[in-house]
Length: 475
Image (cartoon, rainbow, N blue to C red):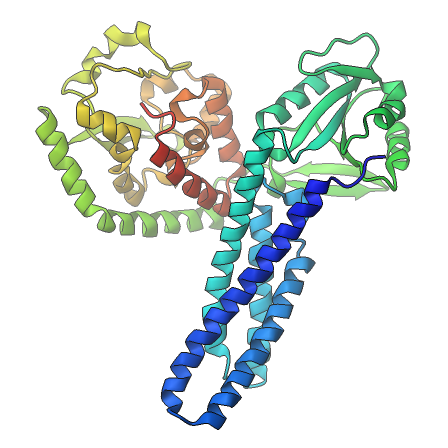
């Protein structure tokens, strides 16, 4: 049977050393700041200074130990959350909140006031550094996985069509780390996405031959409940993970709940909600961030407006009707990046489009001005949409706002992308923007609509910054 992958152990150790260093560093910085402040009040009273050093050091040691234990209890270094999804960050946040919450309650109950300021400094500093540390290691692991390193050697077993579908999904998301070495299918069935290694009757033999790190069962009439149990018993005690894939795609954890009934696992899928307190939180966040950004970026607005007006004849801003929430029409604002009257010239360029589906895009559009090309590349032309966000027409994160003529070409289910407000950024922007095929763009939008989360929005906004700086897929 396969052993524990060496990279997995090394990665866990690196996370442990990094977490420990950050805990010590953040507590040390906090203690130094607090002692420096308190010493200035005590002048040269050495006994009191020594007592303070002793008390703060004791608090730091206890807090460091509790913090480290909490990171273990919350499984923040669980292999199942390596490199993908927000769960790793959530666990780190929950572990940190729990640690400092417990210590705060204890200190309040004991009326111990010496280290309260210590906690208030160490908490934000430590949490920020922990998240940065995890992000840095995650990026390194993802880059290695894109090169085929630090991956799980995986076998797929099931019907040929389902195996092909699963392999394609895993190949699209290489950072998940599943490297498919082949598939086990029914007899005489051809595979398009990977190599066929054997029949479903010979699963154990193929496993012994290839020693995979994971076996994914995709479903087949031959894979009866009894047969799946036998495979699980065979793998028991080994380091090969057994994973059962469902036919559900594009649905994330918060909407999935396991309901065991008499030993039979039922997967309960909740319907997406499009109102309530989660969306109230999203709206409050949009108002606060967009309002602050409008004030902070007002000098950029002024300079850009002047450059646009000086570069070519016409207004500084461009207003266009778009479809928003539930298909309602609103006016979206951008900095003008094309020559005046350009929308009227689009009809003559339709045969040259580089876009997909109903989208019209032209990489070397002759209507784009010199300044406009730079603004588009770095998405500066989108900044006026912060006013749309502040007004409530749009959100900071959401599906791409479509044109009315695009909506007229939508098939039935594509209209679901308008069940939430459109966004300045979204999954479409951080996954290729204008280079995305139409079907993939729609899939990402629908995925966002049905699986939105506040943490997910924050991650999208963070990744948007990198994409905008690089100018990937913008034209």
